[in-house]
Length: 413
Image 1 (spheres, helix red, strand yellow):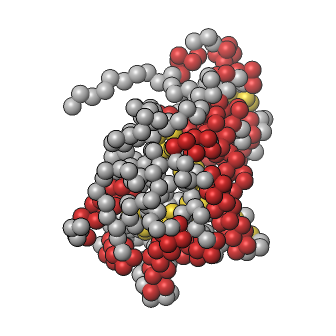
Image 2 (image 1 turned 45 degrees about the vertical axis):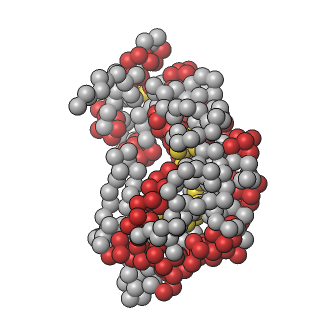
Image 3 (image 1 turned 90 degrees about the vertical axis):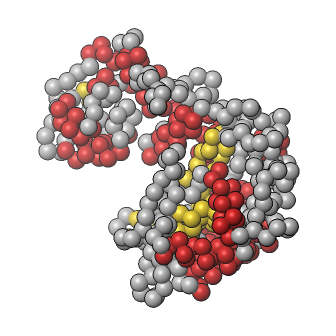
């Protein structure tokens, strides 16, 4: 086999990693090597942030250790039967690339995943060696995100957590049936066991007590664990997808669930759809996910704004829910509890907090609300203020049309 150059490996294995969306670095604790004499930091200046045209963060060096894989998952471009160029980095090559890119101010850390070679333990050990070498040999203080290989030994997962800021184990598909159909070599129970083990170890390493209302930084995977779910590769509805996400958040303490719209791949299985789902579906799922985590909505409430278990693609989930439940409005901004204010379309968490703070000193008018919210168009039909009542506007049969964004002609050039 022809020996590949390092730039060629980088081209193959960075391109192969682009399908994994769960690479965000949010939630990391501040880490600096100033006191140790090493290199790297997750804070301060000198870190270059940039974004791909589709909005994904590329400030991390995002790589696969290898795209060789013994599994043959139908939805994966790197499956064993796929006819794609193959490459494999050595541990030393990944370490060298990370340090070189960091010193050039291209990245703020490393996101490392891998196809499965030889065995889950062998693959996980190689990835752990990368993180261990960076942390212990080079005292690297930048961000490290490692993808967990299900079925790897608990000892390796624990060591991965000691070196990485974040760990993630992809749930892959919304239902066990779909995963067994499209990826028969992957076991749903093994994925959940890995998540449970990581969460248990994080709980053990979490110090007691709090600092200024926040938990103390943990020693094991301080930025938590996350997962990714492919959307549109099976017939799962948005209700099913969000139900699985809610269970993952409550059962395994996940920091984030990332949604990745299915991308058709070359020589795809007949089990897969020929076309990708609308990217707007992925966007609506992220909005709905936000409502679950920060706005007190449950899954049934969110999907009730759409039809047949699917979210309304034309309206954001919160507005769609409000239009379907107009009897719960208008909400008095001078008297309503925080939980009710959070359900008003157009009012975010920060705006609601400002409302609660301001109304201690004076009664709020619509103009006050406009200054806090920025735009009042979406808010006006659903609130009462000191000088404002929506009257029949809340029940207006044409309200949905008035709040639906007008279609725009795409630019031809």
